[in-house]
Image 1 (spheres, rainbow, N blue to C red):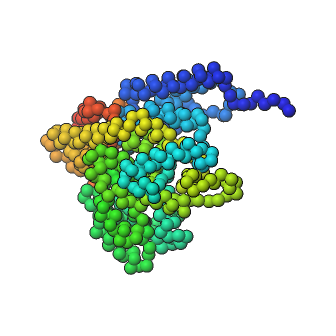
Image 2 (tube, rainbow, N blue to C red):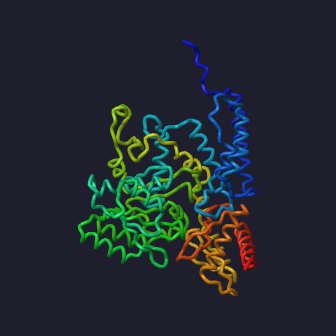
Length: 479
């Protein structure tokens, strides 16, 4: 038989040289990213002009491809780990986890079943147990699974709740969430085939928390109409304001009504490591299921979400399938096949980066970093309250602060305030010096800072506020 030369390989020396080039580029990026812009722009036309081509029939030198990617791809992407990336939920990451991801990908570890990757499965078990302890879930009975992010974790949670509480018939099932719940929850509900009529969006109070009386009234009405309330989704750190719903009270309602209690802590859950966060998250341990996103406030690279459950059997009862081609690798009951605990069969080795970074830095450094973030946001709030130019629209909550430009000496109407704050955001982003966008609170356009990057300093904030003030004055001079 003719020898196959299409092996998709480089020589050992070529691999080493290429690998060193990539590591050098990553190190340089981490070391100098504060000197770069956090914002990138690119229209579809511009990106097409850079990248659009037919798939090449013949290859080219690997180093030239890498050079092109570093110059054109990496520079045309927003840097969510930049200390002045304040919008959405930043992704600060850490270098140990980056290298761990490189290891997991380089060895191409399959993390779906025990027999293929026993060490990978064991590290997922171990790190899940670390999280169970952190959040006060039962260590022996509890369980969980790492996912691509909060969206998949929430989808997995709702699918599990439906299976456990409804079985195969969910035609009368009703699910409850607040108007501040993350959009991924609505997406999950729709993906799972629920109709719009089966979703109850409960208004929040003036602190953007679940309005308990309105929730109780809604549940009572649904029961009287012969419907089946089966799941409630609370928030432990909303994206808009960092608000935590009244978790202990919601847990009591769910227990009384036999409703599955899911908490979406994708953003704020990690705050439990800090004293202030732990106090705010009281009751989180009472959830039937909990979403947390290590790639947010646990400082991991994308993609890494996590779902924790009080009873690991609920996951296996929901997702286990027994196809013939897997019959030889089932193992015993202590050897967890994570493809039986979630949606994915093929899974990347996500646990490694979490494991290596916690082993390297220790929980204390994570605790200190999270506490620093919360304290920084509170310091920013104090600074804003001491200024004649700024109005705090919602106080610093789990490292999120909402404010707007509203100088005391001016009597701007609400429409003008919306315009000026939208203008400030637009001009700041256009300058590329900071990523600072708006949200809507109480029908007002407000600026929102999310301060979970441990490398963000007060100087980063004050210099950004100075930039905001400059553009505010620019807008005023146009009047």
